[in-house]
Length: 415
Image (cartoon, rainbow, N blue to C red; front, side, top):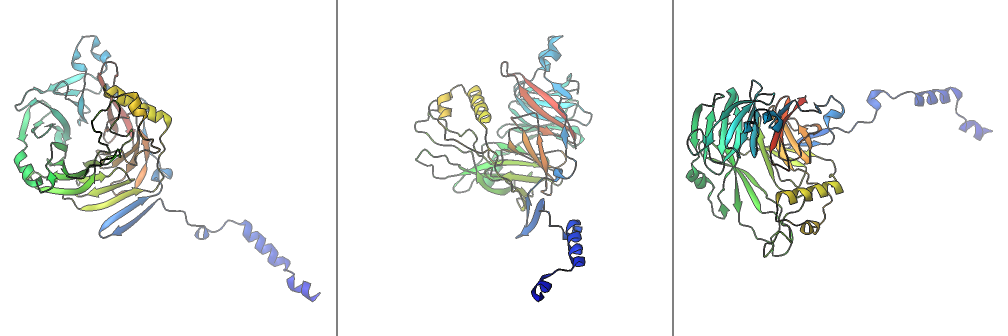
């Protein structure tokens, strides 16, 4: 009896314990929710590791399903049989403050301004080498005040226009000074401008000698991104991996395709105020954020798993290669080593508000705050080249595979 009395629990205590177990725990006693982002400093560099998007708990951005702007549709010019509405080999896009869309065409060697309705407003420039003329137009910038800057390919010149088509400035690139800054032992000077920047500076790619594998393995030659400022001073952004490739001896793309279907390559983008430059090696879900002088400021990461490649995506990639390269053969593409996952980073861009966009899959872009926080992921209607992203509009290009005629479409972006 004594033993039983010691093991007996008072009824009042039992009821209190059961009631407490059924009540919700106070908020301060709930298990901590894993943070969506962790931020730490390492040797003066801020490391931003994103584990989940902010849009999971806040309102996300959206893109309207139908375009609000269509430019280059053959139907727009059919009534007057006017081919000026047609565009091809689009080299750059942008939007003016009055809503008109600027389209730089390397095919027609002209800069054309279109109304949002798709009608032609103004045609600027013509083929040639002088001020206001285009030989190899490659880049377009819409600068503050609606100044239009057109950069030629290689190391040519930059022409600045107002919206009436008047040349307000014409600048030639000093190739000799670029070579003076980049020609060092073991390093090859750049071949062309890689990307113009809003302040008039530009990025180039330099190379250095690396051993080329004798075997059939894929490798990546070294790339060095360098910013050349307006005084022709070089600012290095470090060395990165170039295009993933293999060397075939003799070279015969009909039997041995030299690039993987989903190859890795380094990417660079720039924008924002103050100007910021972003670089990714492409093989990690990681982007480095630099100042214009090459100082590393942040490393932005996502800690999610890789994205598998579907059979449909493999087939689409092969068809795309065959359409663009008439010398390629299907059997050579089928013989490529299998790949299971997409490259972690396949493109970068910075929008008009300074947000970083990172493409991880065709049409799928993750958006990051300028401070490195992952906001969320959007599916955009364009799979190919990076689009132009403004404050409330996304512009991109679609190509008719039968005619080669290109069409610019604009979709409303709701932030």
